[in-house]
Image (cartoon, rainbow, N blue to C red):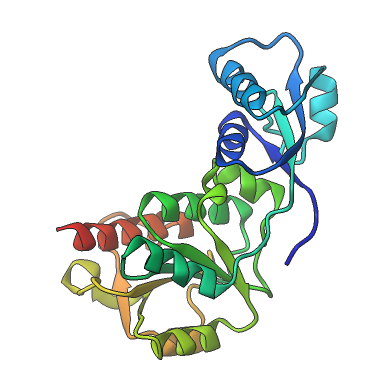
Length: 246
């Protein structure tokens, strides 16, 4: 588990952190800012007894790690990485087939944050990332997730291929995004499923791809031949959601 305090920047991210009940140690707001979202931050902080310190924009700029604080910065208790078992338990408690998103080497924190946000909205029970050669839960990831990290557990594992093998033994099928795969609409993506998304430049690694049961291709008609990793994750996650709800 990680044991450090996390900076949370941006209005929506701070609002969702407060609403989730995660302990917030310090909250800084731009002095004199009274617009709607900031008023919501103040109201949610008041409900939970979180003291607000009003500071100058210069002070917020000095504190900010992302440069996009939107006049609000909070410091919260550390985000602990979940265990894979926690994610499976979450699916069981909801009475649903497990839906996992596994990321092979995502290095861009904005992409990771966006994928966590998509995972939450598409009904995935959690996200699994590797410990090496991949971004972790940084302040930029927290902000990019727009609060979804409060609700969607992220597990970090030593070996992604081995994790897939272990989960296959428990009845979960795996589909990876790959340009040479089957058109996604032709695949049966119902039931217990793990969606594997590769890195921005390299895609899904060979060893991980070999462990997957299916490869899915997203139809494209443009002049370039690849999608941003977070966009690809969103397209495929929503195809899984569509098939699970029809």
